[in-house]
Amino acid sequence: MLNLDKMQTILNKIKENDKIFIFRHFRPDGDAVGSSKGLAAILKLTYPEKKIYLQNADFSGYLSFLGGEDEILPDEEYADALGIVVDTATQDRISNKKYSLCRELIKIDHHIPIESYAPTEWVEEERSSTCEMIAHFYDTFRHELKIDVEAATYIYTGMVTDSGRFRFRDVSGETLRLAGTILSVGVDTDTLFAHLYLKEFDELKFEAYVHKKMKITEGGVAYIYVDNKMKEQFGLSDETAGNVVSLMDSIKGSIIWLAFIENKDGSTRVRLRSRFVTVSELANKYHGGGHACASGATVYSRKEMNQLIKDADSLIKEYKANNDGWM
Ligand code: AMP
Image (cartoon, rainbow, N blue to C red; front, side):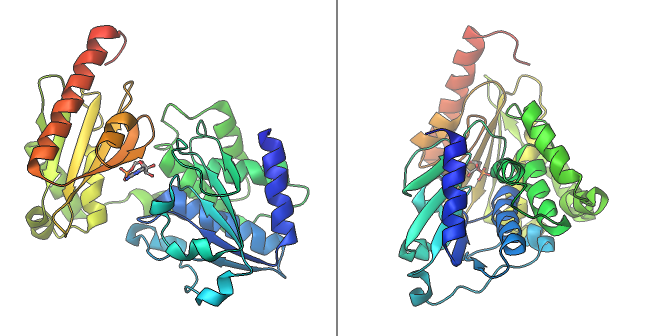
C-alpha cells in the first residue's frame, strides 16, 4: 500500500473515532514528545468535539517547557478508544502499557521496523524524525487539518532535535521544505533554542571533566562510563548524564562513540553513535536497537561492556579497512 493510502486510512480512522489516545516511547526525547503533542494539538484544533488524550506514564524534565500531558485514565476508558502510538518501534518501549486495551491501534514511526504491533502501521524509516512525518501528514491534508503556533512548536522541536539541528544524514530537501512549512506558522526559535540548548555553568564544568576522562580504543572508538558516583558528584539526572554521548561527537577518526550510563538497578544504559558506519546491529546484539547511526542498548556487567567496546573496535577497523572517505 502506498504511504498516501496509509495516511488517508489513518485520517479516516481519526475522523471515525470520537475518542483518541496518543502514546509514545518511555524516556521520551524531543521527537517522542513533539510528535505526540503535535499530533494531539492538530487533532484538538481540527476536531474540538473529539476527546483527544495524551496517555503516557513517564516524562522528560528537560522538555517540561513544552507543557504537561493528560492524567492516565481508568482502564475502562480505553475500550472504545482509537490508540495512536508515535515514534516507537517496539511494544516493550511504549511508555504506557495500557495501550493494548484500546479498541484499535495505529503506529506512526520512523525507526527501523523491528516488530509489527498494530493493524495499521505507517513507517518511513528514511524520515529524519516522526515529527517530520506529522508535518507531512499535516501538509498532505492541510485543506482539512488545522495548525497553530503551539502545535508547530511541538513539531519543530522534534524535527530540530532528532536531526541534530538538521545536520544528520537522513535530512533531505523534503525535511527542510516541511520544516519551512512548520516554521512559517510562527515558531519562536529564539525561545525554543534557549530552552533546548542553554547550559548551566556546572554542566560546562562537567563537560570539561568528561573530555578529560574519555578514552579511545586503537581503532578509534571513543567512550566514557558515567557511574552513579559521578552522577552524584556533579548532581546529574539520568537524562543529563546521558547527554555525555554528544560530547564525543567531533573527534577525527572516531567514527563510533559510546556513552555508558549506570542505571540505579546496576545495569548500564548504552548510547551508541556513529558516522558512516552502522551501529544498530551492534545495539541489537546487546539488548537494544535503533537507527543506523544512533542506537541504544543495555549491558549487565563490566564484562559485557568491555565486549561491546571490543566489538565496536572491530567494526571500526573492518570499516576503515574496506572504505575510504571517512574522517
Ligand atoms: P538513545 O541513545 O537512547 O537516544 O537511543 C537512540 C535511538 O535508538 C533512539 O531512536 C531510540 O529510540 C533507539 N533505542 C534506544 N534504545 C533502544 C532499545 N533498547 N531498543 C530499540 N531501540 C532503541
